[in-house]
Image (cartoon, rainbow over all chains, first blue to last red):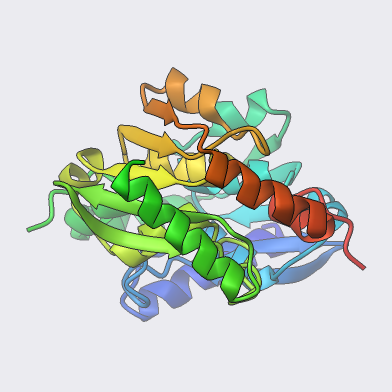
Length: 149
Length: 149
């Protein structure tokens, strides 16, 4: 197991333990984690803090060079919003825990020259599978397809 | 002048008065503003709170139907991140103050079926032109091209 993907999984599990959606992410520069985060929809009642966005926000304001030379690890294939943030900041490589439970905008990333490594981690797959099964409505909200009251 | 674009401009001017980047946005549903915001890079030291993101965050957690039937107004052409958020939430129409000072991902939006109305508001154009001239480094940071110290 990649140690950094494992740190992203720790973030996902932390979110789950907080009652949140179990998706985590870390931003790695020169072999060190410079930002880590997890989905904050429940915890912060947030519409924009997906795991990747939270990690990017926690990494703070960085130079273009640092972003370009960083690798973003995420437990789940990135949605359009997180993909857009990756493109904005010119991050060139991402490592994706799995894309079985949700296929994000990987084609767009690759078309723009971003290297996308798909791990298909059984741990990531099982984590999301259970969560989606138990919380379909919350999950649909997170990907923009929910009918809330 | 569209009253809602005018409200987005008020947000941009509010940001400027706070020492921030003058880009504002409002989310409108059934002819009412349900979320408003502005760039918070300086004010909240944020890497992700562009004007559109701030407005979406302040609008809160919404059903897919509300997002789909909302119109997002923004003073400046939306970058890749904000474009991705618009796509995630299935917002079908955006009104853009101007795209002279910065051309965002309008082609991607249109290719995905989002209606993009470009106003080319002289007020929006002048506001950004002055800001970029006076703050080139900060502006470059906001669009992911800055060399910080």
